[in-house]
Image (cartoon, rainbow, N blue to C red; front, side, top):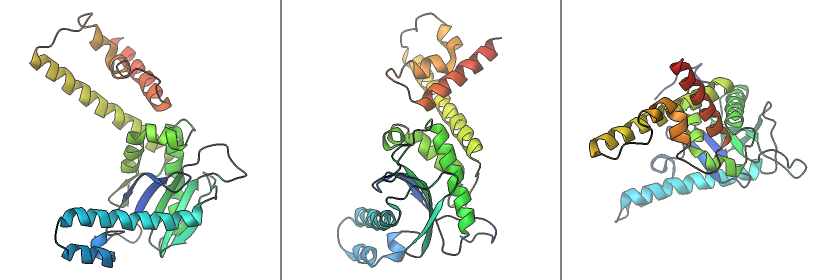
Length: 251
């Protein structure tokens, strides 16, 4: 697929922890595809047995190898969220925000990395990376550490999808990205609850206590109340917004 000259293109978006392990991310196009750039994959396709499983394994090996080389260059570097750092890995331009070093231990150790072609503008890639990191920081309540990311992986993948589709950039503003992610997560939660209510009605399940009261409580009382335990900051914000929407609809 060819892109217009002025349309920014990325080959991958990665969210890595302090040790370079991929917590979330997506590769686009033919970048790090075993069938196109690896002799190992070509040989594997000729071997007998489960070719599909071998191909998948080869792709993961390629990506893991690339990410190790990437970590060898960015490890120990803390990039300011408003001033992304740039390195070159295997002829690709890698721009990243976040991370921590020995002198700077406060804040999160997670890095957001944008991988682009060697000819892509570094300033443009930096702008894209800074927007995504800003949105991620908002969604995680300022705690961009490994545990917080793992507890909210669904929001992280929604963020990547709202930012980029098939390598094509859709949105770069951090505030808009964060708002879109929360709105989309709320819509998917509503759809899931509607499906559960419909299935309960068809199965003839016992009526809920309080008659129609759960419907008046809206998504905030059902979606979050049923989860129990501690809520993440993103979930707490979503519950508060759902309560406001419910109050407005009743007035």
